[in-house]
Length: 301
Length: 301
Image (tube, rainbow over all chains, first blue to last red; front, side):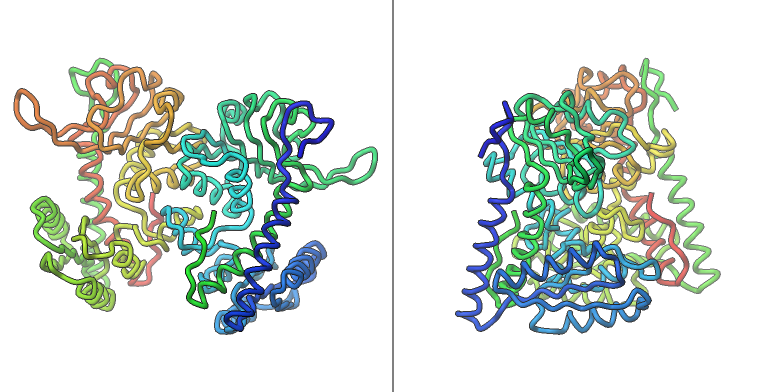
């Protein structure tokens, strides 16, 4: 699908791709119910009253149920102790109806996020943030859970470009949630990978050499036209709420109107990576259930 | 120390630095014996009859004992089963006199290396190859064990250059033992990191832009003068046995005579990274013992 207004870049339709992935996941879930009497189940843990987090959690639960999967919402008060959260995680680890556990971040200040993430059974860690899963991915293994956003980026890249081997890839932003696992996935695909961040002296000098640019910086319009090599593929992970003359608007980390005139392929915001993240969460939950049943899971990516 | 014959590069004296580190480790070990009645202990597991492995193991044991630490050598026949090796690892995991466990690689074909490495208690994994330790390093955490060779490289780099933040670093070779953990360490130090490998289209184009080049390719003389930016720091991890007119000789992955005329700083082979690897093994063992005693370990690097 090409936007009529974009003279150059092919628009990568994450929304359509995600819809196809969710349909596959729903078919797999229905098959597990029919064949094994097992309905893949996702538990979502929300601690506190953050309104944005509450919206995200509701959306995840709605989409989980729409895919024919079971959902289990657990809400703890903002005053919950570390012990309360760990006790809940332990009970979810033991619950055979729960195949995936997602703890909505951020957590209140009194909670040690690392201790909570470390407490999740790695085989139920559908967010892929557990150190065992990070370690498997870091070691090039395919038997771990992969974080949803970078997995979604990788799926789009492979669907668009085929083999990525030998391509020069630059990742902007090095969070544990997106940038670092993204770099590991691209390395596993045999890209030459450059990971840039706030201390990088000249990020544009790096991106100008890239066949693939993945931006997860949380900085509206950071990436400009002269940062991009003609024909490159640009993946925009940013989701930034900005005020415009026409009211509030969601924009990415890429100056889309400029960059789409030079890139070969580009994801829009919204409608690019956003829908892929939730689709990959459902996918990871079904794969966790598949592994629990004893069927060989599909390697991530 | 500068080699008289090298017109440019400062020679990084890994041998002298390693001797200083071993002296510190020996003092720490003596202190633990005196204060806590605990002698740090390293168990080394050798499976089979590979003569090179036997030499490495003997050398590690000799140096462990020379540092006032306890050593436990365990030798299994080449015909040992997976079960035999795992049973030995389990007993070492339980043994309170053993603070570090090293399984000499390679293992015979019938043994699943990954299963063996996964079976080691992560807190005794002084080689730093366990996925929990890989995951901690990948997540930027400082509470895991770091593989010895990249840790040795990092120590030399920090001793020579001070803060590495913002420097452009290129790593050649992406093994789980050296290249990948090296990239993670450099990222933790806030370098911009490029990881190159066999599929990289033009490695020299990457290294020419680097302030730091770490080479772990296993390819004698791979890195030439025109690969290096004037003044860059070059770390040569290669240990290659080659035949010359004067007989067999150990050389690195860097064409030393050429590169030392353009680099700012360079490690020789031998006498560079080699001695640092074993020194870091002893250091990791003492840190594992320190953690076991309940004292705060020194973060790696």
